[in-house]
Amino acid sequence: MAAFSMSHLATAASSQPESINTLFEPWRCTRFRSVPASELVVYNPRTQLSQLQKSTARKPRPHFDNATLVVFVSGGCRRATDSRDARASYGLYFGAGSLYNTSDLLDPALPQTTACAEVEALATALGIIRFITMRYAKFNSIKLVTDSRYLVDAMSALAPDQQKQDSVNGQLRPPAHLDRLMALRKKIEAMENDDGIICQLWHMTEDSNAEAGNLAIEALNRA
Image 1 (cartoon, rainbow, N blue to C red):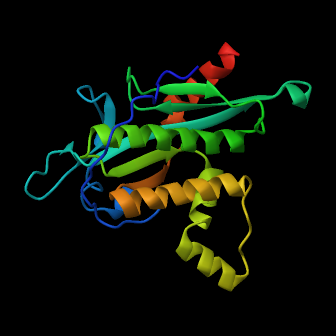
Image 2 (image 1 turned 90 degrees about the vertical axis):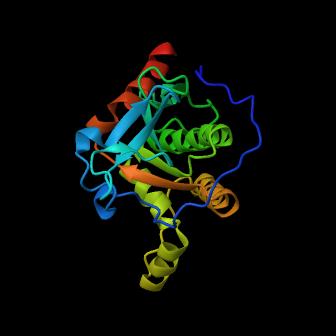
């Protein structure tokens, strides 16, 4: 059962952020590269959301980057002796004790695989992010933390520039769950083009994404 309900959507407004790439790599940005890793993501109890901290020449001490929102997403699968009894789940972590933290089992009609769970984690996260950005218009730079190389590679391969390059090189190979991924890619592009909200995937290790993974496990344990 999900901990967060999206039944109260409102009208959003947002300012236009800078144009950036599909993947977020802190070391590429001068605002973030000098911030210690242990201080880069900080929970804001006022909003119950996690944000990045930045460092600038005028204010070198790490401080909130008010435009950023960090969400940790994870999917998992528990296989039984009979593969027909496998169950998959996802977890979304916004911060310690956040009301937005969410976990749930995959719909039984979906493939009960880790890959599908990672995709559904992203889909659910995007829906909650839309609600949050309607409430807080300042958030227009979204970082989606995942330890899934599959998800990072698949979404990167669907970027228009990468599709063009792979086609030239003869390397265009459709990833699993292509239709669902294409729909999510279009949703991300619409958020950027229509509302100025840029969503990026941020690849981390499994240990760094443990809280979201634990939420996914909790959903399996409830089954």
